[in-house]
Length: 145
Image (cartoon, rainbow, N blue to C red; front, top):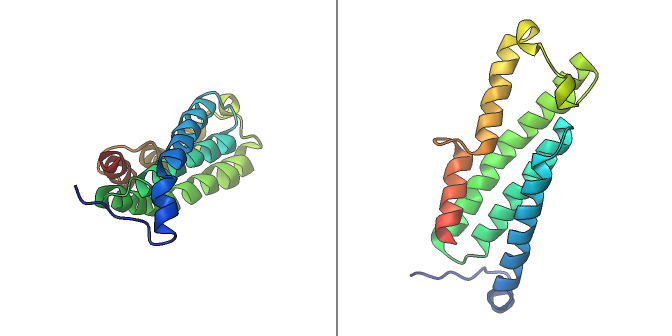
């Protein structure tokens, strides 16, 4: 197995790698459980972003080519999907409905069908549906681990 050391402080990153991975796994579990119980859509997107970044940290500190490439792919995918979701949720839906609570947002397909299709695609990409860049990044990061 090919091992790569992170160029910035390679001895310290090799020594503290199990500690950082443990913290990343704990934050991944905690952020995922916190995401499930959210009622505010903007907070939901924020907690899911924390969970995605925990996977990125796991991929980087796996010290494998697949893990680092997966972390880069997931970071790129997250850079496209997360701002799009924040614009959809915090900007457009909040402006139209006046609320961000999931239970009160209903009937948007009647007034904004094209927006809902785009919002649905961004949501699927954020969840890591196959053939999205987030799926490829998460898979490569987990394979690298």
